Image 1 (cartoon, helix red, strand yellow):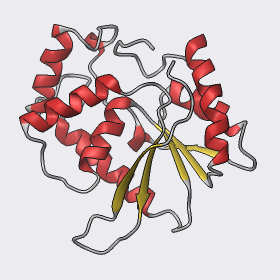
Image 2 (cartoon, rainbow, N blue to C red; image 1 turned 90 degrees about the horizontal axis):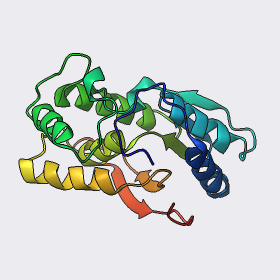
Image 3 (tube, one colour; image 1 turned 90 degrees about the vertical axis):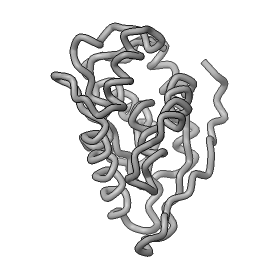
Length: 195
């Protein structure tokens, strides 16, 4: 696990390839009907490995599921650094950095991802291969467009630091009734050992 900000074209290293293979059989047992991936190369590589374990599953990419777009000057910096904390603070304040996206921009992608997933058939079992920041912001905003408070954002930042590669999180979409959140977080379902 790099624990550094990576470029979208970063490939999986040997550890990442091994992690993808370990989780692929577990995902195959869920018998997905759809697999959607971020367009980032490491997510596409993970998706290819997963689909090799699943019968008749054709992968698709969707830009809404990409990781937070970061400015180039952040690439290579550690997640737990003063540079990252400064960037996250500016991001939280909705200050767009050149080459990156603001909180508001990311929320627009969360909405697009949610709309896309809700458009799939009711009996769809969907695997989304995405990234830690996007996944956590999606979880935070799947039922609300309201900005996070500072303390809520701090807790979510800690969750981002704790999520491990190839973590499986189970969400269920149960309703499209206006004014009611139709999404439920079921929990983590991963059986594979921490790596």
